[in-house]
Length: 435
Image 1 (cartoon, rainbow, N blue to C red):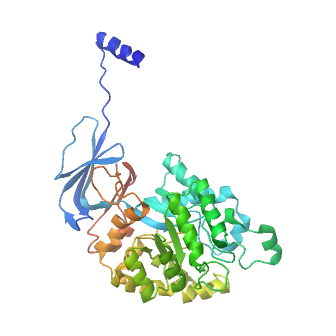
Image 2: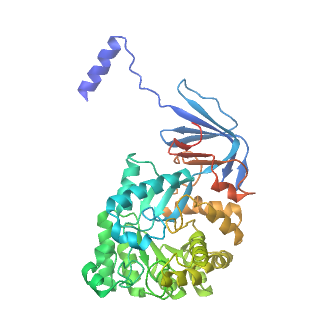
Image 3: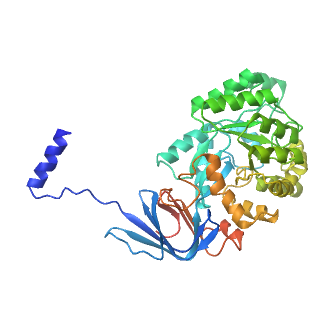
């Protein structure tokens, strides 16, 4: 400290400048700005950005204050907060070969694909995502993005998701006894039975650096088990997961299709229900009363059902049957849930369908009866609360990250505009549009 003080004194005596360099500011001139908190579309506004954060929101078009400051002209655009998708799988790329690729791809192959999927997602206007399960590469990708090594959205990663033997996360579903004996997945692989193993599986993911815990209380559509709707965890097992995760400061996202598995999970205290395809009235009432978040992923349900109808040989027969019987019900279920005041956070299950199409979910949400403003709030205000950082995400306010999306028109009148962002900025860096 004394050396630094002496150096500054010497420079001053020599008449050399000692004032610190001023950080460059960026002024975004916004023709319209969507205040998602107030639910108002404002006239001309200026967002002042410095060091990746919004430092001021000013009425009108403010001129730059410093010689190195710059202006980005969005005067013909509508500006809104960066979007948040609360359910993606960046490691997954859908194809006819998805099942075979479990045995043919190396971790490096998956990592390169995940990096490409992350960039596509960011350029689609989604500046933050929750990755709800993969091999653990999602945690490494989160670190690489945060360190600036690769471009991508801000990632909250679940690591490897957890289910019972024969459940949605058991990669030996449908395989021969020969393969099952050799693979023999355990808690480190996301397969756990009984409260003690469930506790251990949570701790495994915590040790690996997961931001949240993802479990499956029912079967799924895209696994090789015969039924996706039945409950596959007891309430005691789910409580063990929730309590252990809570002790470690982690929320719990629960994949669930069938009503009984949903109700057990809600009673046990999970943070969110993912998919919820077969929610019944009792489950909706439980979720509304407990304020459990609902992440509907309508686009995933429609995508797998449409694919199974149009291309009968695309999925294995057991998967195709579930895709048609379960996936096709999601949108109607969502429409009923919003009438019961279930809290909704935006999520799509990207990776089940092609990455970058996430914003189609807005259209499906509004088709089911949700107002465009509420659909956008689900992907901003609500999603920021679900991922646990409403102080920095979800709105365009001073102190928040400079995560900004612009579209050429009014998304409150035409929500499909969100599928065609003209400008995307994350933490002050422009990824789509002119700088």
